[in-house]
Length: 296
Image (cartoon, rainbow, N blue to C red; front, side, top):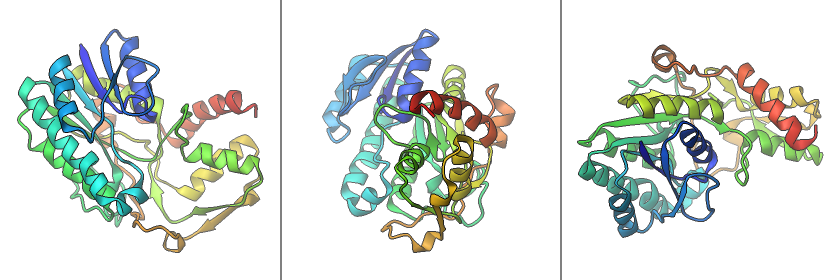
């Protein structure tokens, strides 16, 4: 199978491209700034609509996995037009080009399409984003959902791993605590932290089986940011007194965050061979990787 992956040098993309190649697929690794480590590197600027059309027509993939997005929540709130161009207009065109060549389309979305009033959201719950990032991702979902090609929309939550340039929440915690920097961590915001190697394997099943519809692919554990941070540092014997619990509404952010955007993964548990990891299972693997990388 020939797969075209946008955002292939990112946190999720780099792992997914590697996994796709490992099982024999040809991967067109589209990137903007940082050249990917795996696949066939192909420059692609999502702000250049002509570039998007030419690239898809040139490679004519069997499957497009659209991972690339402007994911900086604060930047999306401040630079709304940029967020619209990358997360909405580029997605709309990718959907049209997928329709033109009749390929399977996978779109990566987020738990931030929900307002966070109830938590454990299922695939059928009504989205109501609080911030501009969530709104642009929901618009992208709607372009995909209303398309005339086979599609799958994947929502995930708080993805983390070690990456060669992107710092995820656990890495930010570890690096700051190693420098004895005190950190304010939100104690009343809940998500479903997702270990990227586990996420990648689940996405692989969606790709290879061409499973259609909405899927929540995240960790299976609902946990606060503060409790998540505590679990990380307890496993690494770091100084927990440097963690300062604070309320979400005290943070100086321009963008509103949902209080509880945790995802219900019952559907994925039922359908997929690869099951969503609990926080304990994911941290067991992650901490082993951290110890070797950080000499802890």
